[in-house]
Image (cartoon, rainbow, N blue to C red):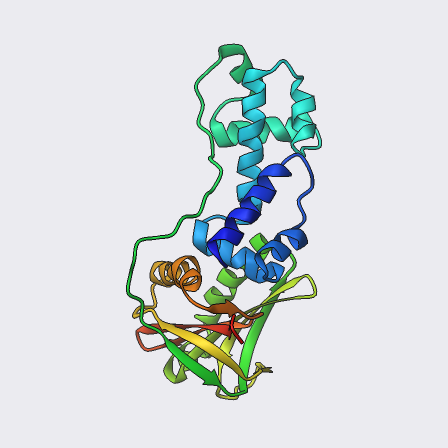
Length: 266
């Protein structure tokens, strides 16, 4: 995701905070499908697009509470809340006080600032370009329609797998994790190339991948590498990201991250 396109997306969000914001429109701005756009945004910023929009709406609403005489209910509706009750609850949770308390006491307040992406300082990042042949995996699968529920189900899946033979055996032969968004549904697959009972078969198409070695299986290290790949490496190259699936490959004490790529010059 190029930096100028990310900033263009942020500008679009800022200009439409009082309206329903279309993820389809955002995905067109950055040239990615909706799933990949949301995943890249989360990796780069540390929060989801929905959370960013919510925080910016509350920040702008709080400005109007303190600097205008508009009714609280009108401000709530303006910033996409159905009534003053959920708006009051959200504002207090985010900033610590209710709308009435802010208006009555003219208290100081914090604001969640509009994002702006800038070029980062130079770093050296090693990676490998692989032409991956079509690959068959035997996997366990979860699916969900909402991002929050999706991540909850992934955590639950791993807890269940660690109680069975699958997790231990997959670690011995090499374990793959695949992310996919299709037909408004999020899919997550975990498995290996070894056929096993109680799993289902999936096939990944042949593709060219940029592959990054994390050097660790710690989740924080994997997230840091993802952030580096999408936030700094990608804008520095002539590559663009193809549609998923991306993959993570776990073996021994290492994780590899595979990102399907096209050359912008192709």
